[in-house]
Length: 349
Ligand code: FES
Ligand SMILES: [Fe+2]
Image (cartoon, rainbow, N blue to C red; front, side):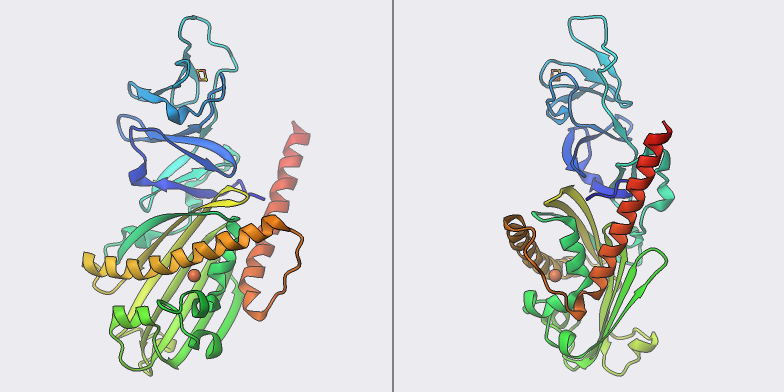
């Protein structure tokens, strides 16, 4: 199940250049490159002649992509502009184009109806280019359905078990107050852990010696954007009342893009507001979280293997699933709406 009428992250901006990059997104092959003036282009990555990926080809001139197999050439509009050895260009010799926008050091792509592609709808990830924050981005390839990643990030009790050496400890399962609420378009899960020891990574990053007041505020926006506001301050200094002083504050920023039903392009990054211009701090923070994220990827892969083995095997829900279940309900509703709109459009045509 894919939601098509949404912006997705297709690549980091540094991945796109004069060498064509092929990537499957929402089950469709896409090739991305830049024209000579730097403008990013995304086309269907399938030559209409004999279906070789155009990403195996090369750019000739400003923006013309030449297929590696028999040399058909396509311009940035997807039109075939040359068939070697013949003057006539068949009408069917064309590929689809996709709207793209560069923002927050990511290239965003619209896989649905191009008429609906409004850049205003791109989810806010300003922390990646905000001078008041230090940040580093990354990409992981996860062999799992994209909604397993949503589930994971919306239930942070798993930190106590999967990430006990970095960002987790039992306090966030046993001593937390949790609130799950609907936002205008998504879900927010707020978790406070008051007067408890800081987890190992926070001690390393923030040097805490005593107990802390820790928060995790998880903001979900469909289909698969999850922004975490996390941090802690020494206990009793007023963080729950909004006075975040003397501690650390970070944003863990995630954008999952389905590749297929069972594989996901996992774009993410970590931003910190303390010592924002110190590259060593950025690296230190990033390294802690990356260790944890690789632990998550191992979990997703193992889950997906068992799902593939028996998709109908029963599962049990617990209280901690509240946020994830609400997100799944939103996705199901949006999917039904998209399908109904597409059917109505086809009927009208
Ligand atoms: S497959 Fe592309 S030119 Fe033949
Ligand atoms: Fe995790």
